[in-house]
Image (cartoon, rainbow, N blue to C red; front, side, top):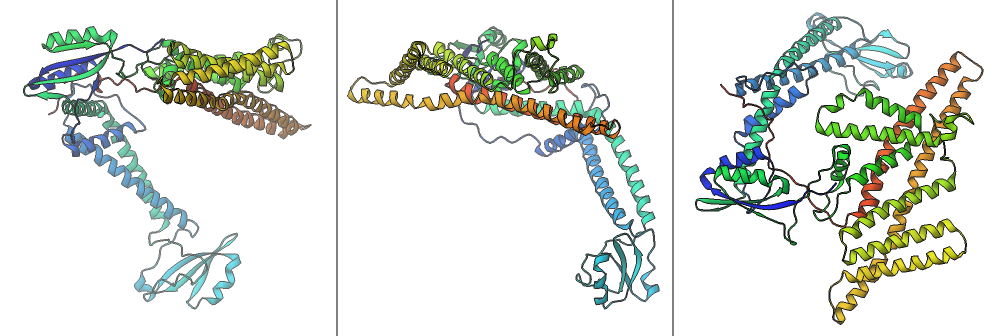
Length: 604
């Protein structure tokens, strides 16, 4: 695994052929372009249609049921199709709002029953105003000066009708007025049913319209590609009839670019990166651990002249996740879920990489669970094969603390050792080797816990490591005059201040022990609760015990997954990267088409 070597390219052609050249470069998809001038403001072509098309496309993508899409070669009247989809979206929103209002009105009116109000003229211009009054507030009725009548009673509520030509004051009763409206309950229910029918019809039409989603998606991708070509055209160096562009190309793709330049009659110059250049970073790991690169690039992009930590991240994340979950039963559930969804996780390259990571996490966690002898918080019988395999006791505080700290020392040793190798011949190498000696000497002294000859030797190594750290820090500071030597001495002293950070980072690995112990303790606690619930009652007690086991272990598994992901990645991203990646880069972004490799969609 390594960072892909880059080559700087300079491409020259005729200004009149810009559009065709950029389209060809997009098809090629191997160049990371470097702007040679500041681009101006770029507005999309027909922005109104673009925005409406994006809205229509999202409406189709979010449809609960989708039909098979039309072929990309199907004729498409984009404006008309988009107009119909947007109208369908607006109608669905209007119908759903109406349904919500009817449901709310029905819920309010149901407690009053199904009745029709008499015409206002028939009751002398008077109106009825309804209040749901708690029984405890009945004395408030004595203060009402308007005519009123209790028209119904509930377990805790009095239903009161107040007679008045105008709406009574808001404080006539200590409760707000019930908004019953003038439409009877039966008519509201009929209206709700009709609205549900209309929503179903609109959803059916929406499903039919989803046949256009591929064509619209290609149109949007083509428009985005066109915008990008126009943006790139604004960033080239133009001189009368000739233009020039620069970029970075993977070394193994230079031959393709040379063939493209030869076909187009373009001038092409390919150069090695100079020491002053900062090429983009492209990680190309083997397929088996490609998700390690995804995890790495999710947090940071290693500098081009740094190193690729993808393999280390992949392996260490799996190990940390296993130590936090620390249960073979939970790991088996994860494995079953991965197997069930395996085919669904193979639809895209990113999902395929992710399922390899998930399978690895489940496998490593299961093996660690076997070694820890934990099956949903239960331990195998003494003398059994499973008991003989269980060589790790997560409740042994001393052993687990030693193991966790040892893993931290080893993890940071890999980081520092790689830094020493990548920067060999510089002060960074001396500093990294000094830190390695320091942390290992400190670890061995902690394990020794006594005054022995070995402890004395490790003390010497510890001090020697600190001296190396100071010397390496001084070597990084240039200058051989008096002022320069003073700066070197100060730089060496400042380098030693990292001792608190490196030992603090090593102690962070204790979270592996703490979280693994917490998971095991919770599992055992839920098992004990289930036994207590069951008691001597084989009926309801057994049902309660099953509920406690399912809910308890479900919550514990969820917490274990969250802790395993968050803290497993944190130890890589924070502790490991802070010592292993001294420089940050930027990712390689190929100038490539967004649209799928399919024939263009023809408009009417």
